[in-house]
Every structure is written in C-alpha cells, then in structure tokens.
Image 1 (cartoon, rainbow, N blue to C red):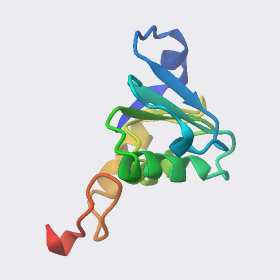
Image 2 (cartoon, rainbow, N blue to C red):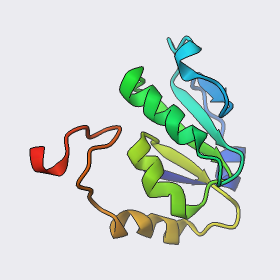
Image 3 (cartoon, helix red, strand yellow):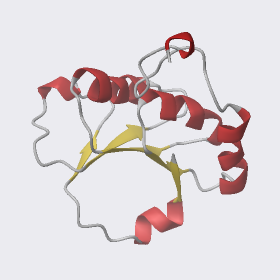
Length: 124
C-alpha cells in the first residue's frame, strides 16, 4: 500500500479522472467508466463505512483503479484498509510514515481471504 503524507497530497497535481466519494453514498449507484481513482472518506477514525465501500467496489463491482483512503486516517487502520481493497492512504498530519510502514511487516499474511486475494491461505 502506498502511504502519502498529507502535505504531499495537497501539493501534488494529478491528471487522472478522480471521483471523491462521501462515505454515505452507495457505490453501486455510480457510473465508474473512465474513473481512474476513487477517494473514499474517513471523516472520523471510528466511522468505518469506507471499508465497506472499498470492499464493494473491489469484489462486487470489479473496480480495478486506485482506491485512496482520505480524512482521519491512522496507522492502526492501514492493514485493514489494504485488506479491504485500498491501494493508497493519505495519513493524518500527526502520523509517522515510517511507523505506519512497519504495520505491513508486522502483519504480513492472513489465513482468511480478502478483497484482493479471495482464496484463504490453505487453498493457495
């Protein structure tokens, strides 16, 4: 998963077709043709509706573009975000990127399947 400091996200100019999706919108109601990236919002770290949106976009709607987590993103959430289908996350300003990156080494594999790797470990 690509981690982005909030300062980098604000200054970077990107020329993709980006859809910013509030966490109360049903992704199944959207036309996703031509969309390269979808930014899913975490207004508070306790609001996990964007996890469900990401999983729905990946598994049921077959979205292949980038899913980016934005808003109140903490390093403790990153592993679950990746398992839900996110490709990148814009970290909250007080989060340490190096410590956040270590989360992926700490939890390197899982028994269950997830949004990208559907088969459980025993079936791989």
